[in-house]
Amino acid sequence: MSIFKHLISLLVVFLTLEGSDSATVTKCANAAADADGSAACGDQGPKNTLCTRPAYNPVAKNYATGAWGCQDVTCTTNCIQCETTECNEAGNLYTCKAYTYSNGWTVAAEDYKCDPYTVNSPQSISTATTTCRIMVPDAAQDIMPNSDTKGTCGVTGDTTCTATGSKCRLCTGANCNVLTSFRYCKTGTAANKDAYNALTSEFCAAADAKCLRPLIMNDAPVDSAVKTFGCVTDTVKCTDTAKCTTCDSSDCNTWPTATASDYLVKCYKWTWADKKWSASSAAEPCTVTSGALPTACSLPVDRSTQTGYTGNGCGACGSSETTTCLNTVGEKNTGYNAGLSATAFALLVLSLVF
Image (cartoon, rainbow, N blue to C red; front, side, top):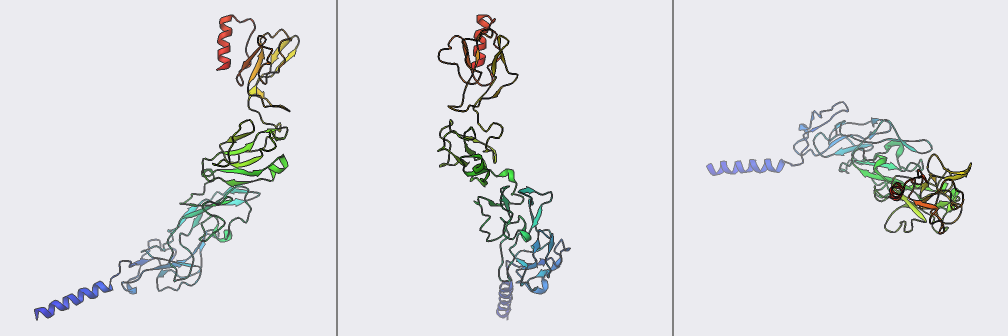
């Protein structure tokens, strides 16, 4: 009899183990207002593995029409199924920065709430994801597939907005789509301002990448063969700073607007009037119409003598002006007085050069 009782006990244990399931879902939310997922799935038996609810529309800011509950609730379209207890609660959403379009993309005041689950058939159980989409400011209005229902929330299978997209990029994490977290530059080639104005922005591979452009003189590249705009990479770079330049903020590689020319240095401008040399009240950009862009400044040694100095403050002294002209670094070619003592003059020279 004792052996028979022992066999009965073993059978009970076997049936208990056989009926158990490590993936059992014990509770699922049964309505959008059921924030604590209090609807028990006990009547489903020990093998219930799914919760179901309607999909969330971040643009309309509501859930689709449909049933909430345990896995026996019908899910055929515009709904999700997830596989952990209470996973279908209304609070199980994440946020992405929202952007609006009006001649370009700008951030909106209110974030999107996004569904971490893929809308699909009952047979497809997706893993929760938190991805957002971000566009360069001048991207086309229709850059995002399903933007009318998904906003900037990530879309499974999106081939336009990818992790390495040039116009629209996919990032991972709630509110990851902050534009200042990415670097983008005007990209393409341009030999004149009209061609530059037709260029559009593209994301760089790295968030700390620099932007590249040619140096401009008289509204054209200094070297007609150097006309590339874009992100600095291992293969796209500035190798001659007399012909190109880089900068380190998004879309900073702009065409000069005020003078249609670049400059490498600012200098005080010197003019002869009323029998004396006088400096401008502020340093000004040194642009030229031909030749190389100035990299240094100069000033007359004797302000009361016109001869001996042929410059205007921009550029180094002439080769024959060894005693009548003084070279300085940018924005230092002012303040010298011919009546200074030799010691004071020497100290001034040091300050101008260094």
